Image 1 (cartoon, rainbow, N blue to C red):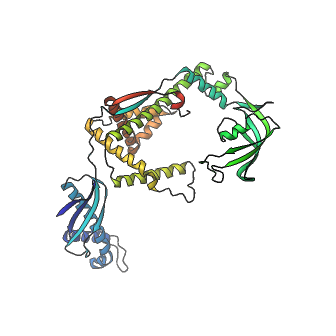
Image 2: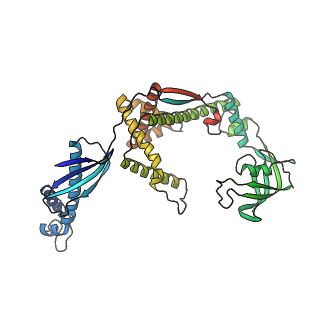
Image 3: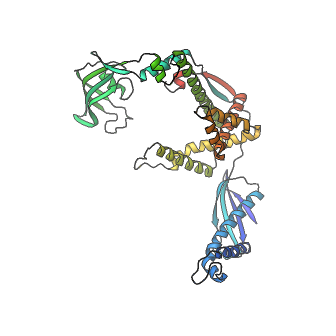
Length: 434
């Protein structure tokens, strides 16, 4: 017999027992299986007497079988009580004597919440729109030229975009602070490498000038010794170099990988690349907006067991990503799963909501949708067929694509049923340059 207690909104506790008789039968069979390969001094493998095997392996076999029987008993009881178990149960033995006729145990666990997706017609969703303009193409051409500019020495005051060579000394209360001194330091003004107030103090100087100025570091500055404090910098200007843009000729264009070498061909390739990247970013922004709208529209509690598992998964993923980039975790920094709990809660809730919507509105991923998404992704590679085969070779990769299709289907469903507010964005904002 078993009974189920409600401990909270999602938490439950099963009280149940297992007959010693059903355990012993399996224990005996397991000991015999162990005996086939058991190495006991004085006996050949498979010829060890059962009594000796029981003495040596009986306790281990009993523990293993008891654990398996508790799990079997638990899931049978869960099925009988129509319990949709989330995560893994926490078992606790209540019977002290494990040789008792009946062994009682409890299993504390969580159940999946009921997800009710109601009317979303009044839910507002922001949909980002963007139209690629000729000016965006021209600005990209200008950026490509600036990136490949060469610097030439000039005899004038330094201004934005110039490269300067300087000595600088920074003092706090009359003492040079750590990292506050450098010789023959090259700096491109306007590139954002140094603080704006520092670059402001350098701008306007000519070769041979020496200039001192005061500035205050931001409170959030990474150098804790000077964060939020006022310091004095003394600058000596050695050289001012102005950028010279390369000519927009055939050699320059071919150097960018455009075989035709014409400006029209360059602009055509830029347009295709920018359009593809813009569409990708728009899809990401709109998907994020749709997911946030669903979280606002559907109230659901995330099972703690699932949040804990998701936090661990995100932590491992983050550590692997850092290792692949060659980033070492600083000593003393605790990169624990708790740091990712908020993100994990959001993911678990969204997973439950998406699953409910997919089932309710039959938005399952169709084979042709999965194929189309893989083909689309593969086109960005030199050998698309290899990428397509790479996905097909691993079921987990195919499931990842299916999940993306499911998300796209849900976003499409929401955009068709919710109150959509279009917002046109500029190129720089979309590309993160605003």
